[in-house]
Length: 229
Image 1 (cartoon, rainbow, N blue to C red):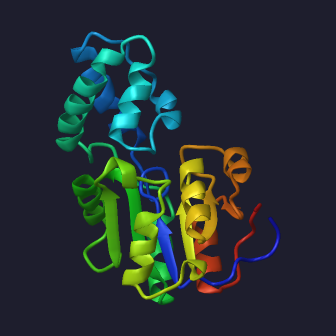
Image 2 (cartoon, rainbow, N blue to C red):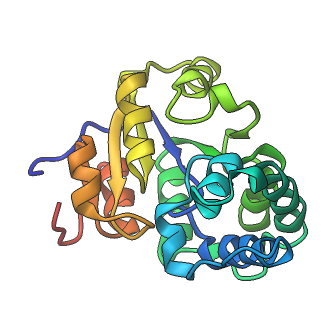
C-alpha cells in the first residue's frame, strides 16, 4: 500500500515469526514428541502453517485427522519438551534488535502479545531484551482469550493509556491481522516471518513491511529506506 501509516503511540508485536525466528525449536520439540507416540514427524517448513494459534491447536494440526485420540497426550508432552529447550536455535530476526532500539528511542511504547504460553513468552523476550524494553508482555493463558480474541489488546491499551486507533499491531500471520481488525488497531504485517505477503494482504493488513528498518523508520516518523509495501 502506498502512503505512510499514522505514527503509533504503541506498537504491539507478535513474538514467533515477528520478533524471533523460533521455527526450528518448535519443529524439533514437536517432532521429538511425535516420535515418542509413534506418529509421523513433519518437515520444519510445514510448521510455518501450523504455528501461531497456541500449542493445543498446533498439536491438533500435527496429529491431523488420523489419530485424534493422541492430541491431548501430544499437547502434554509438547508443553513439557518445548519448555526445556525454547532457546536452542531461536534468535531475533536480523534488524529486529535495531528496530526495537529505534522505536524505543523515539518514545514509542512497546508490547508483546503472543499465543506462546505466557511463561515461555516472558522467558524468550527477556533472553533478548532486558526488563523495561517492553512495557507489557503477554502470552497464552486461556484458550478462549488467545489471538484472534482482542481481549489482551484492549488490556494493553488500557494499561498504557492509549486508544486502539493509536496502536499498531504487528505480526506475521492472518491471525495477527484478524486480532488487530477486531481490536480496531492498525493491522501491520511483516513479510519476513512464517507466512507470505499475499496471505497478510488477503487477511486485511493495511501495510506489509519487508524489513524491520522500515517499521523503525515509519514508527519513528523518519525517512524510510526503499520499500515495497
